[in-house]
Amino acid sequence: MHYPDRPLTGPAGTLERLGLGALALADCLWLYLRILGGRARLDLPAFATALRQSGLSVLPALTLVSIALGLILGRQGELLLAGFALPDALLISLTYAIALEVIPVLIGILVAGRAGVALAVRQAGLAVSGELDGLLVNGIDPIRFTLAPTLLAMLLMSTAFAVWTLLVTGLTTGAWLWASVALSPARLVETLAHGIGPADLIGALIKPPLFALLVAPLACVNGIAAGRDPRGIARAATATMLGAIGLILVVDLLYLLLIG
Image (cartoon, rainbow, N blue to C red; front, side, top):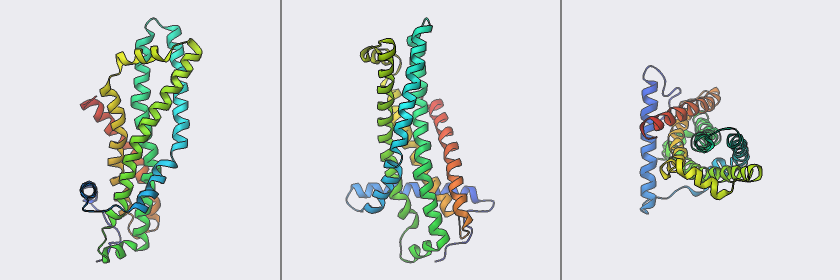
């Protein structure tokens, strides 16, 4: 078996990439089911590395951004409560926009920028160095080898990030409003509960792992498309970052139109 020099190119390249991405995603999901059934094992060292890439390395920056968003939301809420006749409705709208739209998209982009790009670079590195040939000769699926542990880590960390970011942003906003306009946490929760229901919160928690579910196969396919050209590694990283941003925004829009 031999890995081609320029795979997934030509007139049918886009369709080939879509098909390969779909097959890679289906293969990983099937592997996870087999792991749950005790009929397969996960590469734990690779999974631990992927957790560090998509989790611990992103958490400090994400926490700082969450605090900043909470301060912004608190300050804007303070202005709304002081200067408008219907502050509750405006506060709910502002909270919905930031907490339930901006935060999931932000998490998706940060995870894609760290774990997704790292996956694309690793897959491209295997292709450029010829290690993919070695994996194929030894009967190892090179896509499952890289994608399966990374995708699972991205799914788990994206969900955890969604919970953590909403919590940090909410606590920061509540602390600001309590200190500035003496709005008690109970009053803030009561106000938001009238306009933001459980379905909205579930949507905010579902979106980040949904983004990861699509970005990880994209990164893997871009890495494979690097071929033998060393410059393909940089192209794979750039294509993954730009493609992930566009994909996340399109999926978020479709979610709003179809479900939201």
